[in-house]
Length: 249
Image 1 (cartoon, rainbow, N blue to C red):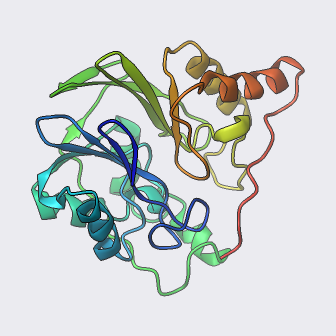
Image 2 (image 1 turned 90 degrees about the vertical axis):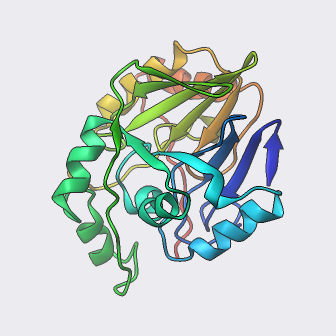
Image 3 (image 1 turned 180 degrees about the horizontal axis):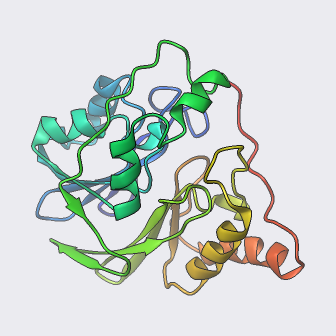
């Protein structure tokens, strides 16, 4: 689903617009002019539906050259191995994500989430193996894209957002660090930290971008700073940002 020039939403689950499998996060595809660049990969339960959405936009999974992961949680990384293999794409993430992926289900809190009923008992997760670890503040140039890695821990300790600039247009792929209307997700996982989330929102506020592309819910292709300011207003009042209300599967 094209949302801006060279930018597509190719997966979104029940917490978004129900474009693909219920467990999928929002996944964004950028046409770099030198291949396709995917941000996050969904849960991996139905890659065929993601492929169908991509093909409906006149694009091909086989043309994906890079898969960037915002963090290791299964709804963001579960499809990376399959999507990466389909197009021989390189999987890119921060060092923290590489570490938690190597630990297994406990590293990404999947064991706890399955026990809590967030994931069904029969869900099977395939951990991707990163091809490239991107450092804090590092910028990768891929075709017309300039992609800068921005550490934004809080939702999870390994969380990374990405500022994507192309031909004068800037987007923030915020993963689960910040959502539409300045909201965040509160969760009882071992590495969730509300204080670090607030600091990460302040880090985001210092970036220049127009479009806010979060991991769940609504996105915006302009005026993204308004949603950052909504979160900052709560922080300045010594209150945490408002919680994102999740739909129960």
